[in-house]
Length: 229
Length: 225
Ligand SMILES: Nc1ncnc2c1ncn2[C@@H]1O[C@H](COP(=O)(O)OP(=O)(O)OP(=O)(O)O)[C@@H](O)[C@H]1O
Ligand SMILES: Nc1ncnc2c1ncn2[C@@H]1O[C@H](COP(=O)(O)OP(=O)(O)OP(=O)(O)O)[C@@H](O)[C@H]1O
Ligand SMILES: [Mg+2]
Ligand SMILES: [Mg+2]
Image (cartoon, rainbow over all chains, first blue to last red; front, side, top):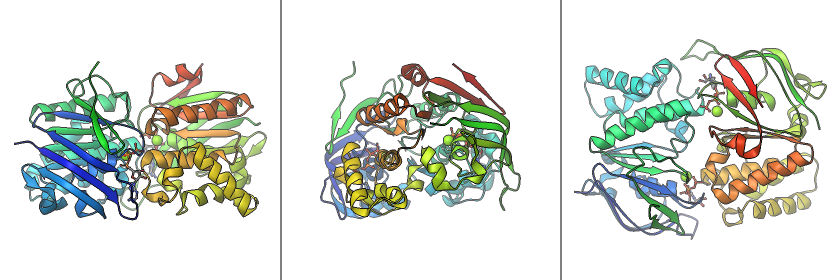
């Protein structure tokens, strides 16, 4: 079973007649990484929103096509049903932060999913150590630098070990050391069977997990596979 | 065109209700940026790059020391006065976009400066074309994609023709075509005696632009030519 299957996806935001997505087909298997690049305004974030099931359930617009996550239709699944399977690092992570401390923010998703307190504590400490962000534990997540916020968002997105990790330009703001830690975490997840959907501008490195990634350019509403050279 | 000097600048973010400890970012920071040059600033996450940019535009005030534009201490200058000299494209541009329509966003600063509405609208429309934003002219500014917001913020700042242009991680949000456009603008500004400060994690950028590198380490700043 594929982790994500998108077929013939078309989407226009309400109030606009431009089809931002105009026939997108994409499927991602377990353990696979897919990299999407393309011009600014080309629809990368929109595609991430579809994969995370936020489109069509929470964002208004004209949607057609078939989207399945772990074999289930996303319209039925909805964002809360999908959140069990998906970790999503948004391009503007600050809007998604609600808890008073970084530690609570990362724990929130786990507690929400009904995990035991002891398990939550171990998982939160583990991910903070692996991403080198121990020093941020007691800080207010809204009062951090942009890169620090990106790290918090990344930790929150991966801590529940989702089957699909979606990253929307989530690496470009990290310094070299943090970026290396984030990439190591992502590649470990991929090796453990997670699928990765990564939107990044061109020029993203050649190291794991990008080494083996399928690469696409999203332009004029459609995906074109890049032939590796 | 005027130099900008940081003289023994100290700055801390005050504590909040949840997180009471204040957060010191700079202490005794002394640095002069000379017009006619491009500076590329880098350093680890949280070292204070965005804070530096906000101090330089007067959005934040130093706790100690002073920041001069030419001979003038910025504490005594109003924000619109500072705006004639320094323009910033923020790392999270959605925060600096205040109008609903892109064209009004660009015109806003011009009208505030005393330009007639019609003339401002014409300048704004030309700037929209210039930054390839005509297709999204009817999209509310808060709904634009990140790269579109960066271009709109850039257009809004550029029409005011400040002496100094500050770009906080703006280039990494742009595709090849708009990146060249923005770098063109920077080069033109510098040729005419202005200056630019570009904040970026890119290792190659300073070399590509023949710029002066400023490295911020936690607790200290070094300048590498
Ligand atoms: N809520 C909305 N209403 C109307 N138009 C929208 C809305 N959200 C996005 N758009 C438009 O849809 C297009 C695609 O946006 P999207 O954010 O998916 O682009 P992107 O490829 O992620 O761009 P970037 O590289 O700049 O982040 C853009 O032109 C944008 O202005
Ligand atoms: N509003 C705030 N309140 C309290 N502390 C803050 C606030 N904004 C930033 N900080 C802290 O001040 C320090 C400097 O932050 P700044 O945003 O200037 O870093 P930066 O170099 O721009 O980092 P990045 O590369 O992540 O953008 C960081 O330690 C950060 O946690
Ligand atoms: Mg985007
Ligand atoms: Mg910053």
